[in-house]
Image: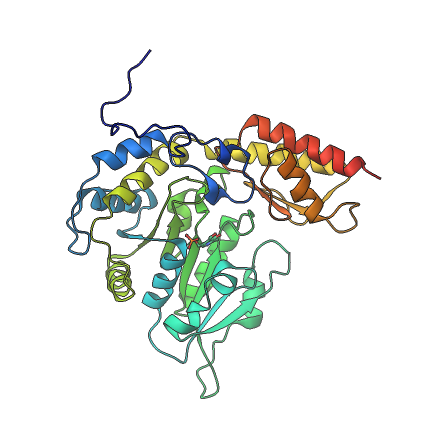
Length: 363
Ligand SMILES: Cc1ncc(COP(=O)(O)O)c(C=O)c1O
């Protein structure tokens, strides 16, 4: 039997230590943020450098930034503490001063779930747009709402913000190209909330380079399906990332010794993304979505990556019953959205399918 790596501090592997016992995550369908960090992440943390990133002298962090810039074929990258921080720093960096507006999907994270910070941090009006196809915004949807005026009454759109994946759905490369060409031809900047762009790439919708070349800034998250405990990264040109570094400092996001965070993030990229582990979570989601439909269920949104959205309208059971019965089987479910990640076990999928069979056959 292989001996334990000497690098682990004595006593670290105690019973219930979630670093090394990802048991709970294996049954957790609430979110892909619920993964447990792995042994290789912990080992990487132990090896991480302790340089100061405010003065850009932390090798582990510099390496991560250089690696992601190279993976996405962009000039530069900037580590950030969260997806929210990445999006808001990007928007602040792309904008100058009011009056200005940011156009985004009305279901997007930046509009609904970032504490209103487009207005508080950037002083921008938000223009929410409804995706008429129910999946992703098209150029035609955007044309109905974009403000191209320069009159005294206008609030010109300076940034269009897309999200991919959104609710687990992919924004196709072809539509992204159309929107990007339109934005560029009108001097409008384009940001992508790519917290889960990794999933679209794993589903072979396009490469990181193909998507990232179409935007001024892209934020990517390490703590969703990739499975790192903390962080995200922003990519773009030298100029915009230089400005983003300044904005990050202004909101207290400059970190003295982030090596332990960036070391774990690098493992998440190498092992979960490059290691091809995301595809399995898509297959599991597909299996459950098909089972749900075979049992007569409908989906709120198509399953294209790692999320299954159950349409519970007209079902004989409620969301509360679903979550309570799931809990009895040891499954964690909190919404009509089931999220799959690479640590979900086959046993959890089996239990979930049988829960669905039981609930849908109840009269
Ligand atoms: C699409 C999307 N963007 C951004 C975020 C924000 O990430 P964080 O929770 O790290 O701030 C989330 C969080 O769930 C998200 O789903």
